[in-house]
Image: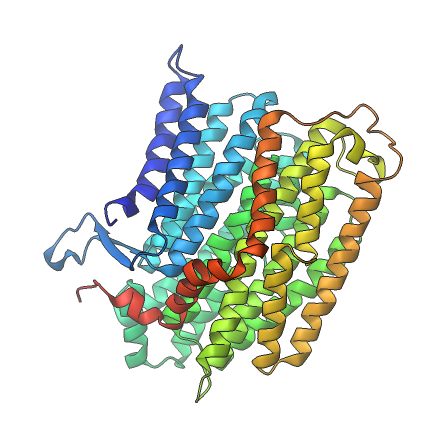
Length: 508
């Protein structure tokens, strides 16, 4: 299995450059789309093969004695969960793009940037050291800046520019935090940095400054309130498959995953960091859902719900960190918090990607994103409407769909962890989410058409992508127990036993 791990990064990055070359060879331009799909599907297959195996530590390069100069890649339970999530959404999105992107010029450029972003996100979750994680974060970010503004319209360019500026601020904070940790410990490997901080003192002013910079920078990448200003413009402006990637996986890999790694694997869970995560999560949940309710632009409504739903995940991670930092931690409760948070992370990738792709179908076929200008789409676009309903029921937490089970687990774990008020807030946000999507059903799918009388069903490739994600939303709820045993429990264990999973295979 070890030789497969570097391929998760090397294949999409290599194919991204091959696509550019093929696009400039007459007679081979039509092959770029097939090559891009093949690369992403191959990555998904590799990710699925890796499930259930042991933690894999491998070095790319291996220069110097003891391979200490090699680029370490760590494929533990958490990385495997993220790899499946990233490559599942990427595979569905690139298939969907085969039909959606036909109205754009230079589709090969889109495919190349898409592959760069996908490969970089795989690199983020596999990186065993802070610097390479930062490098992959930047590659993914740069590709996403270009993809947000891909249509070159005024709205898209403005959103891409705002995203670029705020993303650069976040990157600068992350790099400064890493620099301080390196100056204190003399290492970049996460396990070695954690060991060095135990010697330096985890509560020293320099360590707290580095932690503040890392948490702020990664919270900006994750679009947590109050660092969320870029997201409501970037997600609606991007092409639909990129909106699905941004909301479905990018803010998770570049933000939430990196936050979890830094807090649990490097800094170590403490009451202070746990409080920061819980405050960020609760604020994002509440503010995000209230901002979403007032939206009439379908994609902007979904963008605000990304902020709110990621609040659930960060809140659960914070509760787990709080439990783990106690003098007598209850690992069962901490594990339940992590299970709920990671389960919701995966579920959000499925139903939010489904909703964004559905909105792309509606916008392309009906010619509008405004809910008040829609109506009657369930009769004119039955497949899209049916899949959109499944996504709406999933995000609203209606049983038996996947979102219900992950939210229920988070609420129960918050009660058991000693945070009944936060559990009540989570219930309130779930109810507000349901109200928000009742509005979508009422104005978009039902009622009488206003400007959508000529809408017809989306092309077959786009419908296939929707159906696959709809099946995941249903199966994710019905198969919660097998998923817990084979996917989410190993991911939670990787965080609770973070230093052990990252130290294996490291030569000091």
